[in-house]
Amino acid sequence: MAPVIIPEHLPATEELKKENIFVMNELRAIHQDIRPLKLVILNLMPLKITTETQLLRLIGNSLIQVDIVFLHMASHTSRNTAKSHLEAFYHTFDDIRTKRFDGMIITGAPIEHLDFEEVSYWDELSEILEWAKTHVFSTFHICWGAQAGLYYHYGIPKYPLEEKMFGVFPHTVEYQHEPLFRGFDDVFHVPHSRHTEIREEDIRQHRELDILSTSDISGVYIVADRARRNFYVTGHSEYDRETLAKEYFRDLNKGLPIRMPDNYFIGDDPEQEVHINWKSHGHLLFSNWLNYYVYQMTEYDFVEKESSD
Image (cartoon, rainbow, N blue to C red; front, side):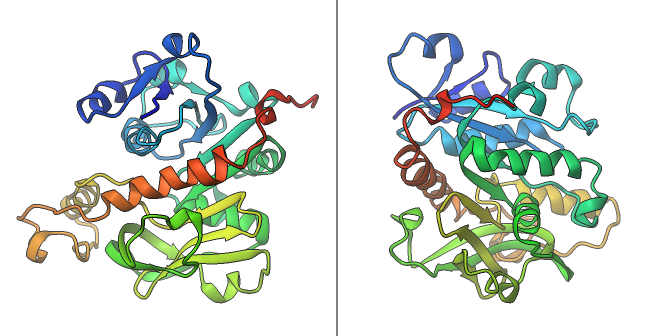
């Protein structure tokens, strides 16, 4: 198992070590004669430490050594993550705009109620999405990040749902021999938590896009461009066991309209435990992306080239 390389003293480190995820600090990594993959994570989630841990857990299960850079939006002030944490572990786009990366992950964000252009950092995000065309070999977009990417690159809209898509739903593969799905069962489960959707008929209008996976309940799950340089994933395979429960009880305690997540609590009883049934899928999804679409497809010297812009 190859390590994921992370900044020294990152809060996620101890939790990942407890789970036997192989992590390595930057100082130790520079003494190894291996070129790790360079991966930038644009973290748009409010609880950044939680999201860091979730993503690193899956990335760290790969056999490939990965060097992580965390990115946050300079045009947005985080209210849920300490400034000291951002200063210690995060970069802004200006810090990395001349660099190249083998891969990038763009997380979701709880801002679905806004039109894309109304988002305070939309201009900055648009600049990053444009930059990624030439400076990132493969980009993995998650939930709102997937909707934002499809809208920016193809003008595909999102639509409000009458009721929140909330729970764990069965999915199937549309492209059976796609390397992304190696090791997958015929039916696999994925958590969803969103108020909006993208629609199959809009995606089908773009011949350069393929719908790789769907659900009869939650709709389109994974979309990719024909070159397999961009993946748009509408669910949250990175979620922890208790993530949906925390969302449910948070909104319930606030008196907000929220229904119990589907197919989640044992016996549909919120007093019971949650049996996780999406963990293996999540590990395979990220490992396959890193192996088949980043590691095996990126030119060896891709990240060594720097822009003169």
